[in-house]
Length: 242
Length: 242
Image (cartoon, rainbow over all chains, first blue to last red; front, side):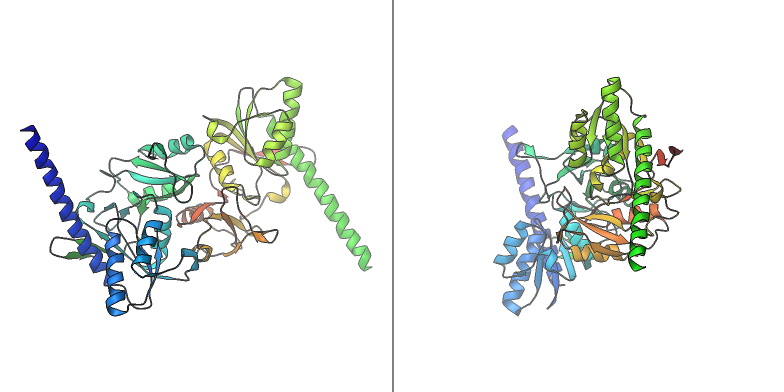
């Protein structure tokens, strides 16, 4: 019985993952259709965003699509290069026409939590400076309220972590310093991440401003009023929320 | 005639500087009287703050004053050690009882511009986390409106300087990347500084929030609602504004 139960759970999880992978692919492939010849495109990071890069690669091969990509991480940069996408650095761009990225949570107002992967500062700069920002998700990322199940990542200066944590805690959360492989996690800018459990965020916009005003908080994972379009992948295709 | 004129200007400037130095000393010495046995004290940086360190050193020698100092720069750390002050790093402190620092501009509401020296991130963390924050200035720093004569320093991520500058410019200023000795200036956190000429800041509190919300802006020189007491040095002594 016990063994049977474990197998059942594993099967369920396996099927769930299969399903989410389908949804992610459908969302990512659809988003890649918004890419047009001559565009500078911000390329997101993660398990959904990788399908965008995959599809753009196919379109380059099939249609001779001619674009320039700005990757938000080293991981994406590698994949994009393999896919045949011309890559430039953020500081070489004079515009970003379109950015496409995943999210950790999306609420009904298209407000997001991002930063589970730790690249939130670069991702937010790209999102903020892109003419159009498309967010692609599977059903598991859609929430009624942000921050109930997912701890908000907050990037902080790696000095006086305790003091800065206290300031963040006063906004109504339990911050935990992110640890990875037994060591304090460092972002690609050399900073630390606090994962902040708010048990639900009532006023995302206000919280965003209050977090940004704390000295030593360099960025946080609330992406407010940035999203133009959410593409929600489903089993048969996708749904667009704008 | 022409030579005489130049000499007159130099004499005026010389006398002005003498006068400001007196005022700075009077403000700094007065501020040092607020330091009490057992305190953890944030030590500011610059030509006014150095008089605080000097006076604290004298009090250690004369009265056996026993305090711990947190310097906001390497320059202050060196001076404090020479003066016999026990030094700890910001991340070793579990509280800051009092911080004393200079400012580039102070308005009638005790709002400040700081960061001419480029150490604004650490200075703001110390100011924000101190139980009491005293600002010491000479008469030349008192202004009716912030940002008329002094460009607001804004610390930014050294990536896509152009893009971040554009976002800052939209708030109504002309940002200029700080250059020092022919090279792009780097803060002690490895970031860049934009000196932003607003030709007068109408709403410092609102501007502070808007700047903080720009991705890639890590900190800025507006110190809003942080100051408990301003000590304005004058020729004969000082004036306190609280």
